[in-house]
Length: 351
Image 1 (cartoon, helix red, strand yellow):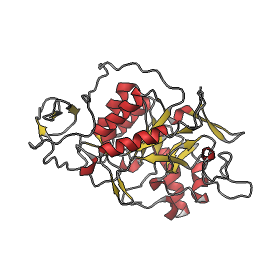
Image 2 (cartoon, one colour):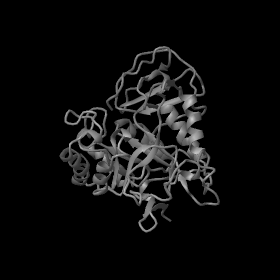
Image 3 (cartoon, one colour):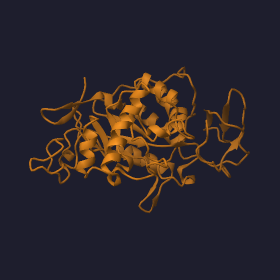
Image 4 (cartoon, helix red, strand yellow):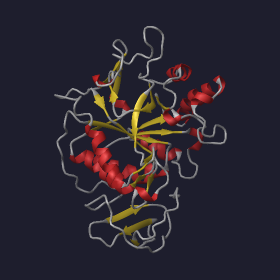
C-alpha cells in the first residue's frame, strides 16, 4: 500500500525485510515483540531498537482468522462503537485484519471524491467492507479536495451545502452502497440549524460534535447542566437542541492538542478511562450511554510521539486497544444496531 507518511525509524527498530508476496516483517530485538505486517511496500532501512510502551504479547497482523482467540463472556453493561474517519488505506490494510480477528465491525466515513486517491481506500475495498456488514457513511463529496479544501459546512453557500450533503449520499449509492449515516467535517455544525436541516433531509444520524459518551436520550446522563430530556432536534420554543440525532458526539483519538503531547502508553490509559466512563450509566443490562471511539490514520510509527499529526494512531496502540475491548467483554456495536424511537425521540439498541 502507499505509505501515507514517511516513517523515521531512526533509533527505533532493527528490521529484517522479506520481499515475498509483498510482505514486510518488522522485528525488534526484544523477545516481547514480533510484528509481521502485511503491506504493499518495499524495503526499509536498517535502524536501531527502542523499548515499546504497548504490546507485551505478540502482534500478528495476517489475512486469515486462524489464530485462536480466547472466548470471553460479554458484559451486558459494556458496549462501544468504533468509527473511522476520512477513508485512509491504513484502515483497510492494518485495522480491518485486527477487527476481523475478533469478529468486530466498524463504521467508516468517506469523502467520495477522495476514494481511490493516494493514502485512501478504493471503491473495491469499501465495497468489501460494506459486503461484510461494516457501516459505510458519507463525509461530503469534496472535503479535502481542491473544490472544497478544508472548509467546514458552516462556510458553504446554500447550493454547495445541498450538493455536499445530498450528492455524497448519491455518490455512495452509485457504487452500490446505501447509507443513512453522515459525518460532519471537523464536527463543527451542531449549532447550525441550516446544516442540521439539510442533513436531516438525507440521513437518519450524523456524527457532529465531540463527547465522551453518546447518551441514548441526549440528556447528558443527568450529570451535565442539560435542559434536554430527549433527542428532539428542536426545543418547544423552536431553538435548536445542542444534542440530537444529527449531532451525535464522538471521542476522537488525539495524541496532540491543547498544549498536550501524549505517547502510546498515555493514550492507552486515556482510552481505558474513556471506555469505562459508561459504567455509572449502564446497569443490569440496560444501556443508557455508549462511547464512540473515533480513529483516523493507523500508522506504523513505533510510538505516537514520533507523529506530528494529532489524529494518528499507531498500529501497536490500535491492536492493544482492540484486544482490551475483547479481553474485558465489551460488545462492539455499529450504527446498524441503533434504532430511533420517533414517538419518544430517543435512541435504542435493537435486539
